Image (cartoon, rainbow, N blue to C red; front, side, top):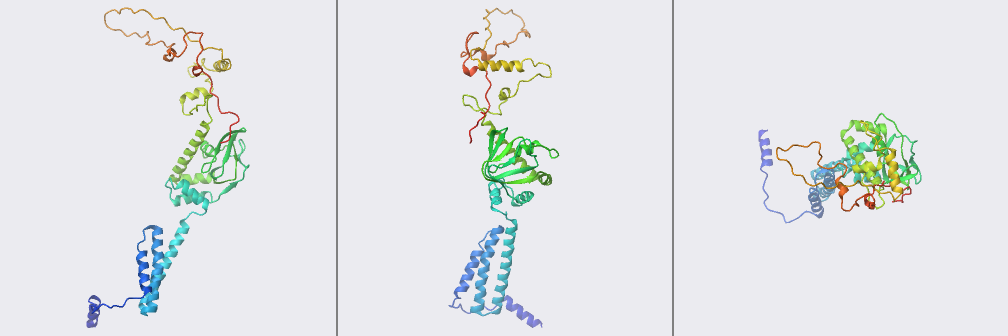
Length: 374
């Protein structure tokens, strides 16, 4: 028995060497099968790389199976290549099933992911969780239909426009448009807390056939509370959307010379905001309706002049007494009633001259009532 085992081991470890190479080559099926195997092993990693590899291995083992069946006529060659072919087919079916499950259903949702979420680096699984929150449904709004009416429609959802254009108006006056890949009600969403209720302050009407997705308020809050990454993602997207809407409104704020006013400028508050009625210290006499009425009279009557106080006469220089220098608290370094801009050489001196138009204090007009469409 030991002699038989030793002879078998010697035959496996020390096979007989070839006495000479044969000049005969195998058939075309054998050469084609090995060529396909060589190309298949050049695939990369990942799901699509594995799909490439097993997609080439299946026809390669099929060629070797036919070679063993028709040319070699060996049962072992045929059996092994058949098993390898079946394993590759099963693995290929498994990869296709995984790609189908992990893929995004619907062309519109796939384009939404490619255009909005993929540039932000959002994984597909996270996007599927977001899409699951609105049940993978795409809603439609015909031209002329109203999405929300000011003072009537409750704020109970958050919508995102996929295609079309929405008109936003307030009391019949056009404010701005909402274009594709923008939120329809981001300001309303951010204005309320989860436990608060409210209604729309503007009217949203479809200018053309539009399609959008919509999250129910409670369901989206539950999703945000469970996943911090999705909460940060919505915070960034909503903040960017609200900023775009503010800049669209800022483009309608101008003066008669055609210069746009920036809503970020602190000085613009004194032009747009009503005059203060008073302060904590009680010093509110400078503002109020009297000053506003005076400004309106100056705007309506161009003959009113801007009265400038008389400039003080120069005093002759007096020699300073010698001694230690004393700090004069009661002597200001400059006259508070004569600011530096009052001595501009371009301004007229005296009370009878008129100021140029660029120095007159007038109220900047807001957007016109009839705004042309963009």
